[in-house]
Image (cartoon, rainbow, N blue to C red; front, side):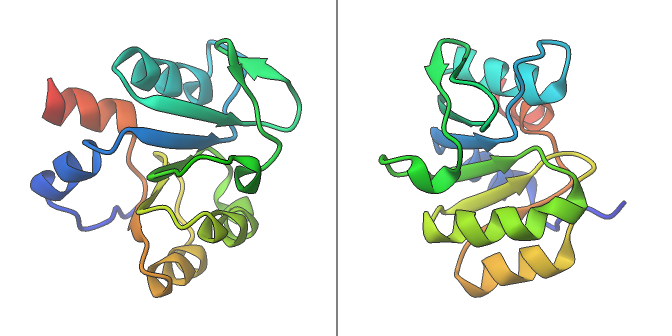
Length: 137
């Protein structure tokens, strides 16, 4: 699967942003959608879980959608299947994040183009945990 064309310096710059909404964050600690945002939280990121099936994850309030989050969000990190990304992006754009980050294995050209037209940077098919460990440690 292809990957976005960001340079390491561009990814480093994105990773300096601390306010992250995680769409599809999981309660299951063995899933990447749990341990990746937990790692980010443990490394100083302000994580806002978005999961309509639970009230709290990692002791943090869960939101049913990203539009419910009252605070500003810089990065929207998406853990949803590629075919579900378009509907998620429509909601995410309303939040006006600086970056939409599609985790490893997630790519939807139509959704990505929609976000870019709104001036939102898009990272796709990359893991925030792996990129943070590779570039920020």
